[in-house]
Length: 165
Image (cartoon, rainbow, N blue to C red; front, side, top):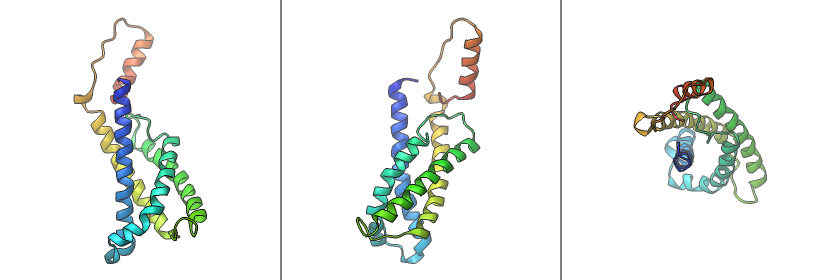
């Protein structure tokens, strides 16, 4: 896969994550507040969570959520997301502990737990959909291997196992 194509897929994945984070915030507020949910409530949480999302995206990067390993199974993906969200949740506690009163007035302890669950579910579904799209045959590059050695056999087996590569 060309470097530009890899970068494009990673950027698309990142942009999808950003959209997903804000959608998950809206869903979380809807779950938590029900009929009391409105644009004003969303706007009240937007500043604090935007700061938080910047930190989370770094945690996602460190947690290797932007590695394009489409051959990994569901359990590997779920495990990777769980580890990244555990780190993100710990960072969120720090952000809200030090930020409350200084940068914003929120102390969303219960909301944060709901939000982590909603975000984890949406991230998993988004990553599964993205990997299916990115590994689709119409996006595949043709590969020609000349010669046969144990190394080329291993390479071909890996490409068959991970069609997204």
